Image 1 (tube, rainbow, N blue to C red):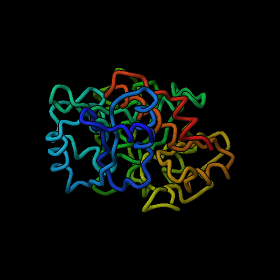
Image 2 (cartoon, helix red, strand yellow; image 1 turned 135 degrees about the vertical axis):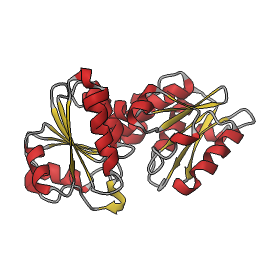
Image 3 (cartoon, helix red, strand yellow; image 1 turned 90 degrees about the horizontal axis):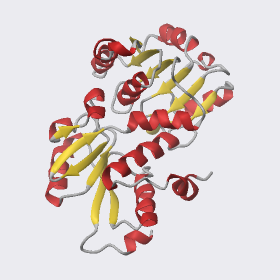
Length: 294
């Protein structure tokens, strides 16, 4: 890409701390945008898991980077290593974007807004709808919180009955108590309770997968084992965008449901992050043409 060919002593670094990163479209997306707008910045992806995260953040500080993204599995683990949290991150307890503000690392969450913006781009307004959300991690939590803020009527959260379940319970508590004024009804169930999952999906308008099931190393798998749970008037969304058609998306299409993969969410959360770093709007239509054309 052209901007990488003109890196110089004044180029500002932006990055990604995640694992796995081989599938990520973030470097291509942001470098295309930097180039299009003539910004002297470069975006690089770094293979960083929980064990290396603290040192990686220290390294970002030492290098005085402009900012960086955080993805799975680091979105919640990074909180102690930051100086401040924006409201979006405080509510969701997760960070996907860090901005260097005069040496202070400020954490933001743009995932939830990216998710709802993607639905709007598909002509879907979540206001008054019921959602069944699978997951309680760093992607699912912002989706739950932002959906509540934007007027979803009811949300049923399913999480595996393991270390993640307390986070699911906390998400429901936040919606029912801390966000009580929004009048959103939230419930939490173990994902292992298949009959309850079936019942909740049957009365939902939207089924959202907020987990990494469907992407490497879980490619070919789905959070839905019984395809009869899906129906034509159901909207099925996925945070997974590589592969573009995950197993869940294949199941949704086979059932005649509306299938929306994670590509649009990835684009819009990135556009919001880009604006936080640069103060400029990402040239979204250009990125779509260059990167997301089928």
